[in-house]
Length: 241
Image 1 (cartoon, rainbow, N blue to C red):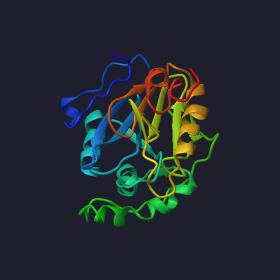
Image 2: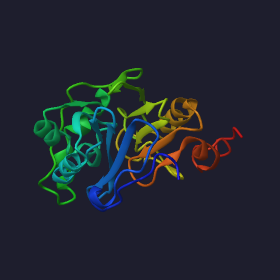
Image 3: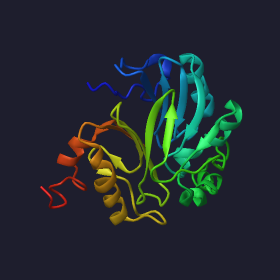
Image 4: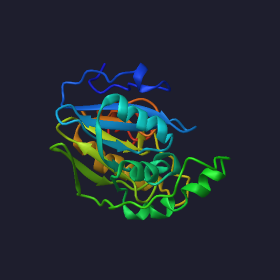
């Protein structure tokens, strides 16, 4: 088992406590919405300051996790603007009194369409359109309790997608860019397969094989393993092996 483990499947966090982690940073993954999108509650053991990464919905459940863990949420970080990643951000921001940071401004058109998109799936309550307090751009830095995170603009799945990476903790939040054994869809409006592959190979792989990543759906993965085995972006698949 890696030090970063998927710690909460579909059950409440009370039944799935965070796994021990030698870093000060701790993470609990809470799948939300019918799409089982991985919302992460990330916090510092030392200060109990926390951030939500991609709170897609089920806000009461997310607030319950905050209460149970006894942490103080200081910000919301978004990797991209799709409905299942950002649908709960505005309500959480209002309830907790914290800023929404990210994604890149090129995804605002998606954030403006969250309610309409959920309505197409028959969901008419529990989700809101979102306006970030601050957009992110390539090269920006984020901070949580003294821990620095790189912001990497990675278009392809959406034009404004970003990845958020902590080199010291060897942890990346990649949204729907990369999955264990797969990659994000590019058949949505403004998606690009070529851009997605370039983002993964040109911007994620340079961080090293020992980076573990939290994807938007499914299990935590490892850059090195995907670079060896992923049928879409491995070195062999791309003729670089």
